[in-house]
Structure formats: C-alpha cells, structure tokens
Amino acid sequence: MLNDTPTFKPGAGQPVLQARGLKKSFSESASQRLLFEDLSFELAAGESVALLGESGCGKSTLLNLIAGLEPLDSGEVRLRGQLMLARDADNAALLRRQHIGFVFQAFHLLPQLDCINNVMVPLLLQQRGLDEARELALSALRRVGLVHQATAPVSRLSGGEQQRAALARAVVHSPALILADEPTGNLDASHAAQVMNLLIDLTRDQGCALLMVTHSESAAGSCDSRWHLEGGRLQVAPEATRV
Image (cartoon, rainbow, N blue to C red; front, side):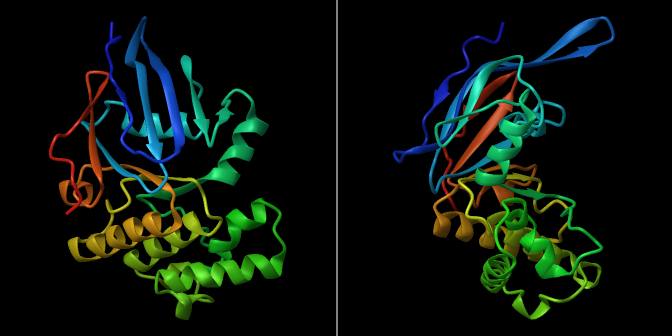
C-alpha cells in the first residue's frame, strides 16, 4: 500500500492548486495497476515545479487528473478553492477555461488558423468580445516576441516560434495554473533554453503556478523545485533551486 506519500507545501503564498489523497489505478489484463495512492500537495502562486520520473510512472496522468480530463479513483483537486469534478463535464470544462493554461510537447496549434487566432482561442472559449480578445492576444504575442508573426499561418513558424505561440495562448487568459507536458521535448537545446526562460518569466510575472512534466534536467533546473514521482510517491529533491 502506498499510504505514506508525504504532503508537500512548497510555497508560503495562497495555494492555487490543492490536491488531497489522490488515488489512480488502471486495469491491466485481469489485474489492477496502482499508479499512486494518497498523493497530496499544494502549489502557490508564482511557484514553478518540475515533475520528473521514469516513463509510465504516471506523470502525464497526474496532469490529466488535475485538469479534470480523467477521473480520480478517490481524492480531490481544488483550483483556487473550487472543486474539480472530472465526472461533471461542465464543471471540469468551466474550471479549465477559467484557471488553467496548457503547454504541450507537440504545440497543438490549430493549423487552419493564423498565429493570433490560435492565441485568441482561450478567450473566445470564455466568450470574451472579439476586440478584447484580439488586444489581449496581441499583448501576449508581444511578450513572447512574436507580434510580428501575428497574421502568419502557424505552419510557417519554426518549432521554437510555434512553442512561443503556444506559451502566449497558455497565458493570454491569465490562468491560475499552467500545466506543461514536456514543453521543450521537440526543441533543440538553444530553443529549449529560450522557451524555458520565457515560461518561467511568464509564470513569475503573472503570479500563476507552474507544474511541468519533463525528462530534461536542464529544463527542470529552471524551476523552483523538482519533484520525483517514483513508486507511487512524490519526493522533493533537496537541491531544488532555480539555476
């Protein structure tokens, strides 16, 4: 039984993410595979955490559970004090739109839209006015150094530019939490460093929390803390300091 997972409270600020007693298992053939049980932690505004661990240990699954994209076996997730209910699709979608920004390894930009319209998507899902959405998207593109590519088809952007556009999309609606899954995995070392610097700066400037899954020690070193998911337990690296 994995019932001795410690509770982490890494920041002194008001938590934007609270996870309590998370349990998740999967059916494999005739048996159940337990990923983790009684997993508890908090993330404060402005906090950046790298989540590391072997492939298949449950890192990406944990992000999905936090976002309400998969149901928990037991436990609860709260975003800014509001309970995330994955089994209530409307509740989960509303909290994602209000409070979460996503960054993925594969960018997940919409190829039929130009750069600015990709960045506007989270605002339009919140039913913001078109003029307001456009102004906020232009501001976000400025912050990531892409305003000159606002009307460019995303297919014409380089990999680094596409990830910067994805960062602008992730923060344009001022989320409380950014969930990033291998955000530098498709980039060379130079572009990866640029994207990580931007991601950390955006997190700090907007006062949102960042939880990032990565296999990259370099990317992890940009964060305030490193958490290791191993054997269903979270361990905080003692040397967890931003470089």
